[in-house]
Image (tube, rainbow, N blue to C red; front, side):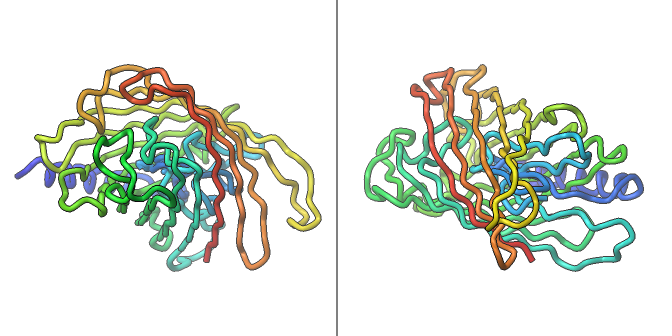
Length: 337
């Protein structure tokens, strides 16, 4: 059995174990962000706030990584949520029967595609649509996510040398399981991602990823820990290794807006710090690579739409990941049905 098949078997067994053990404890909840699954996110929580991958992540109609269950605790928002790629739906109310498929469609724009600290398109924006499908009340989700550069598509990129932004167009496919335990105190998810660099002529740049995520939803600041293991489709490419994200989030009530319904709006603040164990790019230094800070506000709109603007700032710690500090903005339009 090849390594690729072995990892897929491990992910499938993990999902089965969580599913069989978790359904008796609690209703499944949607996983994110955590992102940009980012990453992640979320790979975004119960009131929309900007999961991915890888990012990933994982409920709100945008990139939230986790669904906070308690009234006092703020929903956990991945600071890299604009990149987060899993977007689960809200858990069924107690006593509800099977509710069918849960589908969330996102149309996101980011002024920079920041993924795990890397500036993928070299200061250029990206359109990032995604579709998340929850299979009834099983807690199992499938997520499709894309990133398409919106400027300088024929220009070289800093992160990949002679490759252009067009070469780095990307589709990500994520299968994950998410559930809540101990009366909603702990949210967990496990899954796998295939990163498909569709703009490149072959699969030399493609990666596999296995991930696990834990959020203490009812604790102050909703602390979370995300763990990722990445390996290339072809061993010769290099870049196999672990990545770890530690962070938390806090929601600040802003009051009501007449055009956004009777519920008060919330400013969702988030902070994450990342450790890179040599993943994704051959030659990356092992160590703490970057920290991300940001905030977003989910604005409910008619017809079950939610518009979420966000602002983000990255402090870079390792030149082999990113020699520059970065700031960028995001705008997400979500629809759930």
